[in-house]
Amino acid sequence: MSSREKQFPYKSILVVCSVNTARSPMVVGFLKRFLADNDIQGVKVFSGGISSHARDGMLTSLDARLVMEEIGINLPENYLSIDLKKHRDLIKRSDLILTLTEQHKEEIKNFDESKGKEILTLKEIAEETGDIGDPSMKELAGFRQARNEIKTCLEKGLKKILILFDI
Image 1: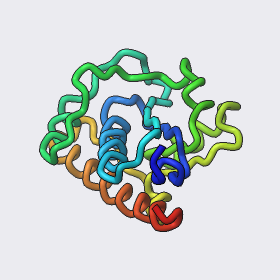
Image 2: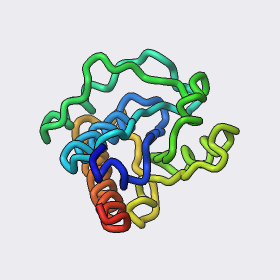
Image 3: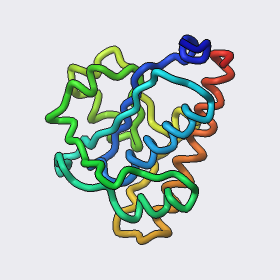
Image 4: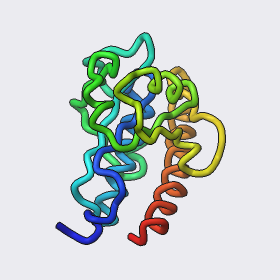
């Protein structure tokens, strides 16, 4: 076990958005890249959707995959969405829950499995306020905007974690 693995404060990170086909897969892509680039091992990263129209088995948005490929991060073509209302075990096993909006944060708090969990929006982890809006129906430009907001928030927040935990 590397020293970085011992020091990183989370072993399981759950990313929550509306339907788990665009924003949360992008966050997962960034998180996995960050962990690999910093030689942090042993951290599981997964995602799911929380809205009433979240469903199991939907493919990741092609636009989300395209804008991530533009910056060298490939999202799996065969990834299928997860409806967290049906897979509460993912909530239970997470150490940190990151949401894309305040509404997602409030919705996830309604599940008993989230009690005692650290739940933050991506903006909060970057010490900012607000939401990262849904890019669907906004063409590639909307997906690029969401991608860039996600990247900025994660860079700020994860840098803070590295400093705080002397990693």
